[in-house]
Image (cartoon, rainbow, N blue to C red; front, side):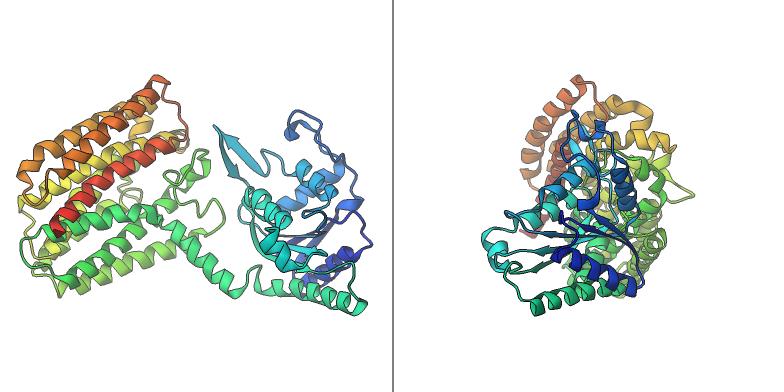
Length: 498
């Protein structure tokens, strides 16, 4: 592990200097490559005098510091707590080094950290009792550095250590602190995180990678199909089917990150709604891990599907629908289909998340593939999905175009994709109203909420078009269009349960 120790005390010959020395010793004993920066010995102007920090030329010492930050996997900041926060010299160092274009970037008012994949820890001395500093003062210096500074730049702060009271401590106590600092460095042999931290980190990384925010739509669509079957509900088939669908969805999302990595890496407009899971781009997971995860998720979907065959009265229908659904879902980005690269991805998502999943739930309960009810319900759901999936291609368009991905947004342009999304928005609301009399289990509540939502969403879409449909993040439009889909899956589930 490449470790950079930054001594933030303006005097190198200090208790903080001894703590930094001890940490360096321990880290080297742990087998780390260690570099050291003593901020008090660097020559640089503390204040940013230019209009922007990026326009203030870096002194040679700061150039070297920047190179070391870029080199490091783990950063250690050792500093005293002065007036609740860090010394002015360390603050000036951070002001001058963590520059836009290096530590973070800003696009259309959205900020993105650029130092992902790195960890950090803080070692602080103070006179105030640590519980008072943490719970009464709210740890201003540590919180500002770990969250507002390092976290903002994409660096994860894994540990904060405080030694107190520093001014009135005896030599034996100080020696114990120095030994503790050496042990902290030595502990890097096990990685920058504790055991529980590592478990949480791995679990959180995989959870973010499978993008759980998009799973409820598929699970509720499957539930619609299951509840729409006129016979008694098979609880076991419903439970296994939900796991089967969630696993297939996870395999699809991870497969997308693998095959869309060239586009996602170029994407400057990524958000919780667009731009992929960011695992590869932010250093959370490597390509082999993603491939293994996608494979395991797919196997879980197969195994739960096989288990469901013993519970469903229509095993052949379930196998047929699941097979088609799996081919279309994985083929969204995976070769040889690569549907999203050919302008067919939007239709693919509407088919798989609408008729495909609804029909799968229906046949899992023993229904026939030829029954019209699940198809009608599924088509209505699928139409509601098209506006959101069309809009999601707009922020991604520049990166997709550069990567050779021919989505509808790439083919039609941002304006054309928005107009098409607006058309499908109004068409889906109209379809919900027209289909309501024929969807006997679903009440008129669906068009009663879908039509007003569609009209309300149409207004900002028209404003976006009038502004020239700029290719940037459209989080508000995305959130509203996803909420719109929610009516089409939540209302039928509630109606079918009642």
